[in-house]
Amino acid sequence: NAGVTQTPKFQVLKTGQSMTLQCAQDMNHNSMYWYRQDPGMGLRLIYYSASEGTTDKGEVPNGYNVSRLNKREFSLRLESAAPSQTSVYFCASLAPRDTQYFGPGTRLTVL
Amino acid sequence: AQSVTQLGSHVSVSEGALVLLRCNYSSSVPPYLFWYVQYPNQGLQLLLKYTTGATLVKGINGFEAEFKKSETSFHLTKPSAHMSDAAEYFCAVSAAGGSQGNLIFGKGTKLSVKP
Image 1 (spheres, each protein chain N blue to C red):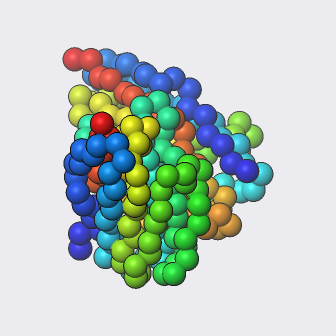
Image 2 (image 1 turned 90 degrees about the horizontal axis):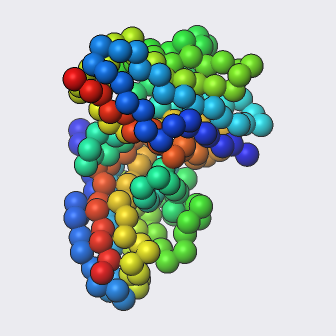
């Protein structure tokens, strides 16, 4: 039981490049989330998916797209990366009573 | 709407001293409350949570927190700090059962433990 897994762990992009961050969970959870973490800002919600086939914007969705491929997988795409998107990205899935379980994170640097 | 305020972005204690990390929340509906811990270069790990029932909640690694509705607080404590407690701690709130599980996080408190 791996919990929530994320790939890649680290990534460096140039401005304008695109990439997809992958997330998968093996706990049969319905809801999944993408956050970004910046120093002094806590975690901010980018997008979430309450169930397979549905996605909704969070607090900071601009510049991102998401896909809920199936119940297990929830990917985050940066179509044209910008330096302001340099951050640590976390994926999470939802257990009962609003308890979220987090992946190990992806550290992204955009030059 | 919910919000979370963590007082103190950095807290430093000596090994063996009391740890107190403060969290105040705002919620228009009964809240669920959480503390997460993040060790350097790792993801967030659930430390403890309050959903219903007993207001004093015990978590992992000797931490506990008390839900005080009258004070809208959920402070995190540990009687005796250990070097391994050095980490960043996040308080979070959700609208109990009604927010699609969405959590609102505080900005975090970085705990340093001096030998």
